[in-house]
Length: 75
Image 1 (tube, rainbow, N blue to C red):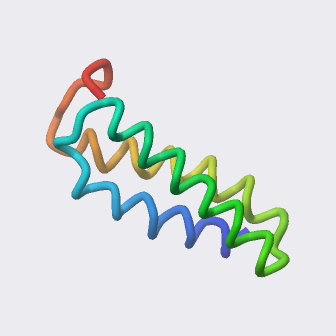
Image 2 (cartoon, one colour; image 1 turned 90 degrees about the vertical axis):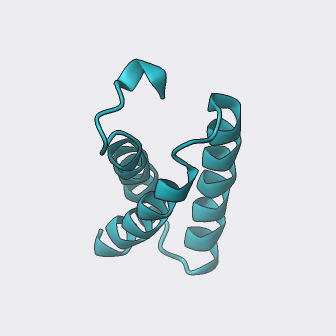
Image 3 (cartoon, one colour; image 1 turned 45 degrees about the vertical axis):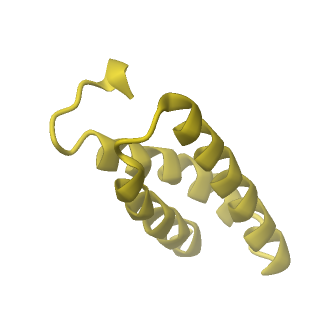
């Protein structure tokens, strides 16, 4: 569980630099990162970590994008 949480935190905080990108660019980046998370968990044999990592990745990415008070509907 902690492995999935750590992976999600690292990738979620990295999304801060993509704050000003368009919606389609953010979606593409998110899909790539989710595929990378799945690949990393399969290679390291932490199969349960992928579910936790993907859920918390979305949570951390949303928090990074809305830190400056940007409304959620503008993500």
